[in-house]
Length: 205
Image 1 (cartoon, rainbow, N blue to C red):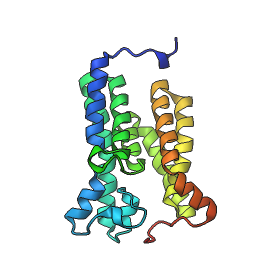
Image 2 (cartoon, rainbow, N blue to C red; image 1 turned 120 degrees about the horizontal axis):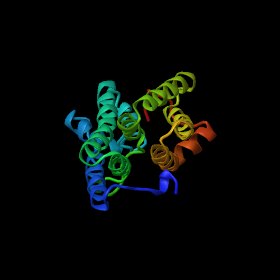
Image 3 (cartoon, rainbow, N blue to C red; image 1 turned 90 degrees about the vertical axis):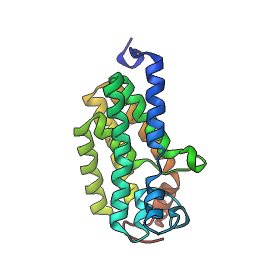
């Protein structure tokens, strides 16, 4: 059997890690922060998304940065807490469910964000150096193209390949699954990119 088929952590601990991860991931910081700032419901502007890119469309860069940071750190927190309590495998489960929690928060009728910031946060907790590589790829692509969505898609295509080369396998598997899900969540962005109608970074609407 390969490392991918061997899970040594007790199922009960993995279940607890999943619950903690989901609850942390489902905190809708974009919505909470924009409301607290008196900007109303971020779901009523732009793409209707609760993530940092859509928060930026309010014109408040500091609020968008805060949303990005909080959405990332909830993924990091899920990984680190589960790792401290139950070990490596539980940390991966917690990271996966934190990502799902952001995409499908129970508090918002299972309609959340697209997961890029939380994806980055999970990487920070599980593979910090790989997270830096993700950030570098995103920044370079964004500088050249000015498209946030394309930058994320490119990074999420490259990073799993890097992890499969460098390992460990279980982390590579997690990140691959996160990338596939996030690519699916970006399907409308992909259509707009192909049509040349995708909004560029900093553009409202």
